[in-house]
Image 1 (cartoon, rainbow, N blue to C red):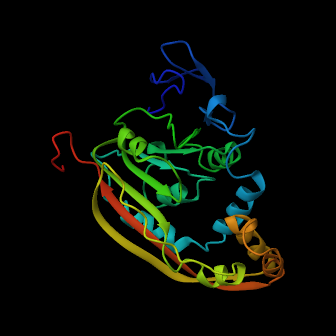
Image 2 (image 1 turned 90 degrees about the vertical axis):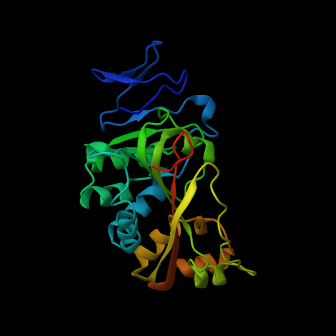
Length: 276
């Protein structure tokens, strides 16, 4: 098990229905199976992260298959990741768990899948749908994860310092970082903003060596007003942009947009600097 105590960084072990460390810190296992490893001092609000309404909208939208091409690209990129026959994968900022469920469908054992998100509502949803996987409420800036413990990292739009990524990934492990491509939702941004800006290329991630980069582009045709509202609610567009333009979009029965994602693969060098 990879979970570590957020107070003292000692490994946690499951005893009955509580996760405990050797220093006596204890964290109850929720009925859905997840554990809350987010201490109060790491919270910036009472319920940090995406709201329950945003997460519910995201679940409906993703379950409808609109981002399936991205999920399939993620599965293809991670198909050979990891050391050994039973690689451990951590999804940082996993939300309600859509991408790790798709990975499980593609053959990745759910028992070897771990997810962390700061939004408890998202982790609860993820744990309910994938009970054999392992989920924890935690901060991507202070991952409750042991050093050098996972074989592969997935990060889809999640913030966080490179130092934490390096710390938890095993030498020779793979990081798949997904970010918006330059043309992502360009026509939508053009309607919402007076002077829209294309996404700029993300910076290199310190401590890793780049081993590949690809783009996943597809037509994003959203059908029905409910799906349009769910899409707008699950994105920053729920509160950004011109109010009158956003209200007009919320009345639409469909949207024809463009999806553009950048998938970057990195490897963590071995201690001697030689890639394995």
